[in-house]
Length: 446
Image (tube, rainbow, N blue to C red):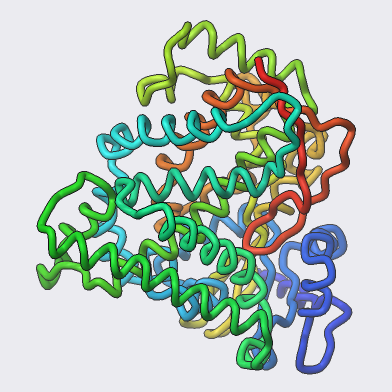
């Protein structure tokens, strides 16, 4: 018996000549991607670049097939290719065996023992930030969390060796890069080549970040000291094939990509977590009770990270409801079978974690914030429905680092202060990540 041919892959309405669907993405990218999930089937085609076919994968089983089963045979696609062009070749942007070699080179920097050493640095930075907050002060929470994330990154990567002026400039330049990289990736290539002010500002800031990192590399190499930070680990890393160390340019690319991807993501998740705790005082009370029972009067340590199950469920629920990733790409290298469909070589594939995690067919009452949905006795989501750190060989290399950072920060902040929304309305915006458009909250000291 011959199997029936699959239905043709539908094409999303509203494409414009030259711009494709870029207009919809620039106008309301989250709304547009959510409409695809609502209005079309498991696969739908859109145009991000003239002459290039992009297929949005919307079925969780097909997404898992793409990431896990087909992962070794796929390229990383336009998003990561453009990231590589903008930020440099790194473990995040590399594909194939090149990615495998880079991942093995960098893995020691994210080993359990190294992360354990970072916790005290992370906690001290959070404490220093909170010490500067005052009763009744109105915080721009997202910008505050960006500053905190940058501080934690700088101390774990550079061991605090950057002077205050250099660090301040690094933070400003990274902010420009983080805010601009999403649009640069999504827009057609010719737009990025226009001599527009925001294009020039992005290029200047990116080059300034690379120069700052390069100077730190040069100074550490010249000193010969092992400062015990991530930069020292990268300087000791060797290519498993050639035995050669990473070049200064390669280290710059890894750190720049880590700074943009890790800092922006961490800041967004921290912001959404504080937002949801403010909206749900019962959840916040349970977090505080758990912290009191586990920690008593002492500060959080690395050993506590796995001893705070309710706080971990809170963070998992934030990663579901407010996932920061809104378009992750891959590309077929050869003719590829995905489910019932056969895709030609050169087909761009993409999926949206933010839309996937809010699908009512996959999660009961998906727009409600409910940490208890992650209890062992609760109904688990289907395979491929919850992908906070991706899946397969390209799963985020820094997932344990990120979770440790998030738990350490939230445990430290919530014991010191309560942040009050004051009835303000918060809406998401998708740039490099999905983050609050504006999130201001009032400080109440405990």
